[in-house]
Image (tube, rainbow, N blue to C red):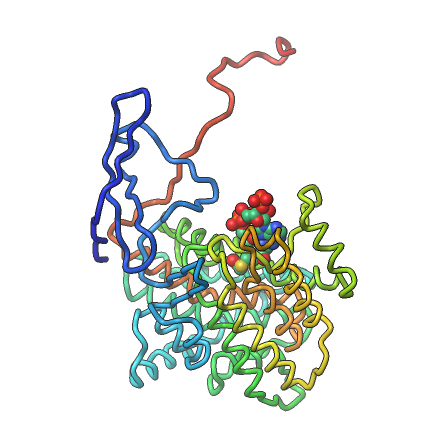
Length: 436
Ligand code: CMC
């Protein structure tokens, strides 16, 4: 990996001591300068304190760039709007993994690699039976993806570039099969084997919707919408689940275990679980007349109620993915002949009221990717519990790309944050009969 340019320095002096340190400021291709604090503790005895890592660059990366103030998202330099309109998910997957868009021969070979790996080991059919039918599909996803390392023991050899590459292909190829089967298992329908004559998105829709007793009908608008949803969710730099994948990977754990850790982190309602929570919230609000009291509840700190699908650690502007999804929502509803979707109307009114309210304006809280995605997915026939698994399906490509970049980074070492200890100072053990 190229060394960032040392443009300037920042000097830190510790008050009441004569200790000071000059730290290099690193410059990326885009974004703010970053103070390199690696010498800070050695030279001053001081650590930094940054709960939630909001001010900390945990790694150097060339994959995804976000300008949160301007509402910009770039994959390998390409704006998300252009990719969502002109590209396909598999092409974006190639771009993320390899850094450049493929030519025709490269794309053909990549597609062949992915389609070759779409089937799951036949033993997985029985593996599912260990889960309850009503288990949340994210629980099944964590388990099944983690278990893949038991089927591909050579994946533990992470220093072998070929093994890393094959693991990446396996994950990207099999995650649609795993996600669709999680659904099929929950409703008691037969698992559908992947069809390599279909596109990545269409194959997933096929495995999710089709049954052996009926002819499957393709729908190009829904295929395009699915593909776009996958593109929009494919990567998002160092978010909680990606950082989890990197942290797990920094120990040398195998890629399937690392992605299972990422899936677990994504499940939470503050992260990937928000799309599911948005629909629950809209259902609870129920009617436009209830929006104002709901907003008042959100603003009341004692209520602990959040406006789900709003706010983001990095975006302090409209999430560019939410804009694209809002448009896609109309396309999907139009295709399905849904003239009035009460949830969409409720969501749009909620957005309008929130964006005029000083609480949200002053905190720069805008709709994020999850605000509209659930409405589209519901219209496409996905049950609410499948929303977060679909996010995981798409993000698997980003996670494995970030994992590969980390393993190949010569600066990489085990992730091991420090702490500000505020517990009891050293004290001696007292026998139980002498304790107050
Ligand atoms: N509703 C109401 N208030 C909010 C919200 C919200 N959705 N989001 C942030 N705030 C308030 C927060 O209470 C705080 O107020 P104050 O300054 O008075 O204490 C202020 O805005 C700053 O928020 P924060 O909690 O410091 O922001 P954060 O960067 O730690 O959290 C977030 C980011 C996404 C977890 C948060 O905005 C949130 O919980 N949103 C709802 C859940 C959601 O939609 N998550 C999906 C995120 S996008 C997809 C993904 O990453 O998976």
